[in-house]
Amino acid sequence: MLSAAQAYAAPRRLRGILGESTSEALVMAVLSILEFPDPRLRTVAKPVSEVDDKLRQLADDLLETMYEASGIGLAATQVNIHRRILVMDVSETRDEPQVFINPEISVLDETLGGYDEGCLSVPGFYEEVQRPRRIRVRALGLDGETYEKELDGLAAVCLQHEIDHLDGKLFVDYISPLKRQRIRRKLEKAHRLRA
Image 1 (cartoon, helix red, strand yellow):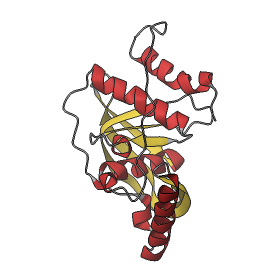
Image 2 (cartoon, helix red, strand yellow; image 1 turned 120 degrees about the vertical axis):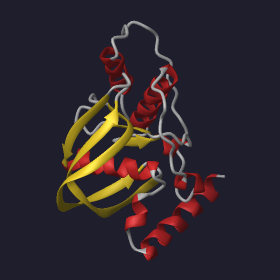
Image 3 (cartoon, one colour; image 1 turned 180 degrees about the horizontal axis):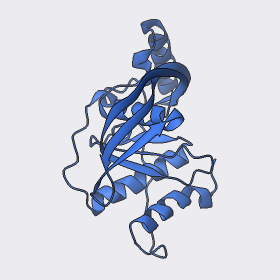
Image 4 (cartoon, one colour; image 1 turned 120 degrees about the horizontal axis):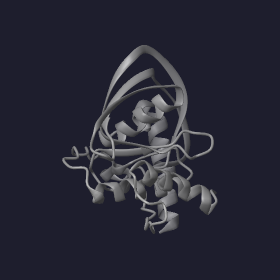
C-alpha cells in the first residue's frame, strides 16, 4: 500500500500544474470500483462538454482511488460515472499523473505487443492481450485545452485499456469465452461470499 505522502503526491502535483496553491486543503474521495460482471461496466461513456471545477475534482478523486487501489489507470466508468475521462500513472515513482478527457487515439505502428493485463474491475486476474505498441492520443487537459501526445509501451497499453472501459469493454472481452466464463464464476462466487 502507498504511504499517505505517496498517495497525495500526484493530486498535489496536479494542483501545481493548474496554478493552484499547494497549501490549500484538498478534499478527495476514494470511490467504489465496480467489479466484473457488473452490467454498469458495459455503459458507453458520454463526452465531457465542459471542463470545470467539478470535473477537476472528479479527476482528483479518480487519482486518489487509483493510487489507493494500487492501480496504474482508472476510467470514470469503473466508478459508475459515465463521462469520458480517465487517469493513469505508469511511472515507477507514482508521481506522474496524467488525465485524459474525451481521449481519441490513432495507431502509429500496427505492430502488436502482448502484455499481461490486469484490471481494478477484474481483481486478481491477468491475461495476455495484444494491442498496438505505439499510439497518438488527442484529448482535453484539465485546463480545457486540446493536446496531443505519443505513447508507447506500457503507457500505450494502459491508455487503450482505459479507453476500452469508456467504450463499455473489458480486457476479458479479448480472451476466450471459456476463460472469461471461468473468471466470471470466480468473481461472482467471491461477491456472494462478501455479501
